[in-house]
Length: 281
Image (cartoon, rainbow, N blue to C red; front, side):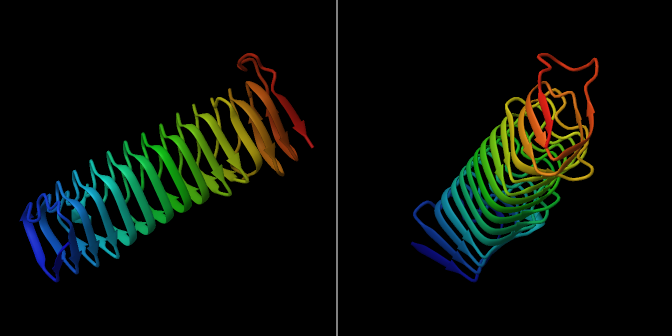
């Protein structure tokens, strides 16, 4: 494997198409574009990236203890088999059209429009902020230990399992399909409208009008915050809720169990079959 240490590169494609195996140690990539494009079998350790598009069309690379500055926007697109550990990502629009990503101990404080149209993603102990529209159109997502600050997250996502997450996000999981979330906080209005096969287990739910227009929605031992009102409108749902639900409005079918419900609204706008059983224990 070729090793490059303690060097600085900038400009257009300084390390283009390095495919025979390349290790970068304490290397800085300055202003410019596509520094490592079309490369493969690359390992970057203690490096700093400030130029645009460094890892486009790459396959089989590992990043450890690195920093991606804001200028390294759109750094990882159209790539395969990326592993990233203990790294700070200040750049937006990361990880698009990627197949195969593993992130561990990664912080992304400017993560807007990140993880688009990607598949086979695994995240462990990841933090993202300023993260509007994160994970749009992704498939096969596995997350454990995650903090999110940003709206419109997980829209159109298919086949995901999320554990131990703190999701501060509105309009999350819109039109998502086959999602299970365990032991997490999901706080933000308009949660999971138009979703299919969403299952929430031991989750804490906040924000107005959650879980409306859902198909085959399941809640197991979840709790609702005080602002989570007007829940379940036009949804087919099987819900077991611990404690109080502020209000329930026009669920379409299924069964809702809760310790108490502040208001149950069943009006002329309810949709058929209009046979949801509502039980206060």
